[in-house]
Image 1: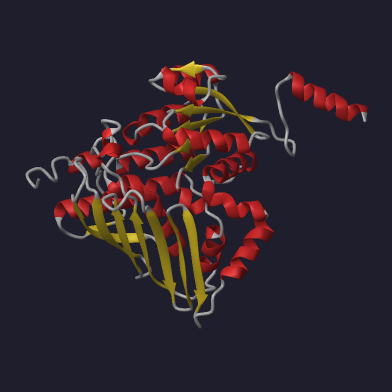
Image 2: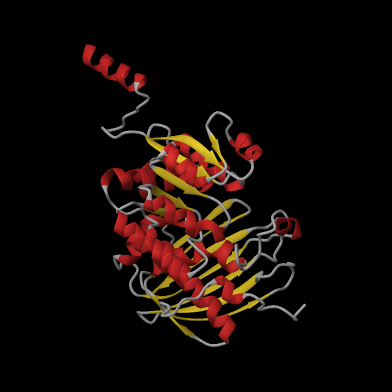
Length: 384
């Protein structure tokens, strides 16, 4: 028993914690807004593997409110060079993602980036290529990939268990009023946020493309302003043509009721239909084979066998699963489920959708020339 006690004592004295022989990673949170609360809870859930090392925010009050027990920095460069974190989690306005992600990767940090990766197709490609060059892991906040059962469905679709994929669809009806857009000057701007497609729908687009298992080669779209008083769109619709000939339809809006937020995706195959979603915080599931037989129970049992009963609660805070996955990817030198390439391609697809709306024509994907959300500036001028 003495060697075990000595091992435990060394862990305590050196502030190290080991799980299967792997050390605890230091996390630096940059941005202390509403989503940071989910990150903090996820870090605590993974406390055997990670620890919060410091916070960064322009507001010391916001940082201290989030967690007063750790060091606070106003400048992210100072924080990264001082703390030398293993993982940097970025939750600032989207327009700032590129510069922070670039600095963090160049200084030896792994990354957790909230969506979208950047506001530009070329900048997203640069971050993806830099992650490959540095060998650092980058996990995207594409939360839908981490929902229960989604991974099982993805594997079965891609293994051909439902036959050929014919088409897919998503809708994200995530209502927000003027109070939401008025809560920060950057919200709804082309420079820092984008509209309903970029902010609320991009991770759903990522999910649909990932599940369908093929690459978009063309986008056609329209965007509109119906209720919100912002620069960007509060309603957008698009169709993506995939390289295997299947089609994906997309609807994203914030102009529906903020009391009835809903998102749903469906993948249609020759031997089955998969539909999953969430409405008013309650998940829904409808998986059927080619004969119309419901397969929900089968997938629920598989999920429990894979991750235990608690894994069915993953939708309550998918960031917990993102951190778990990122930690494991660092320890075992593999790519996260939603990796840097997913971050780059989702932005490239979204910029193709925006470009199609601007040009009023179909646009080839991936984009051959740079396109950013700034290129949409002035799109709605004169309409209201």
